[in-house]
Amino acid sequence: MPSALVLFGRQLRALREDRSISQEKLAELCGVHRNYIGRVERAETNMKFDRLIKLSAGLKVRPEQLFKLIPKQTLADAIELEKQIKELQKKATSRKR
Image (cartoon, rainbow, N blue to C red; front, side, top):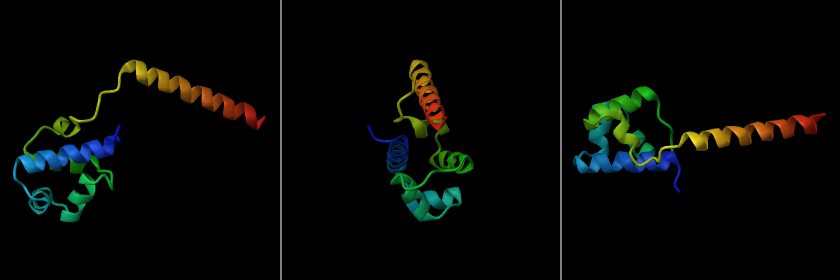
């Protein structure tokens, strides 16, 4: 499964191309450099929240549409992950003693 960053970039590109907007035009609409749009689409950089809002405005979509390809994590998955982290922390602490 590709990372959330990769899936976000794919969704951004798909939305941009569906609207026939170039990277350069989207960058202009969002007030960022064209190369930045390309880096986000290729999952080479993270994005600040304010830029996410600008991107969604430039594409004329709700911000959550940019996350459409990212699967939802269930509560059970989150609880299990938290348990695993606590177990690892406990083991690491006991090894230090």
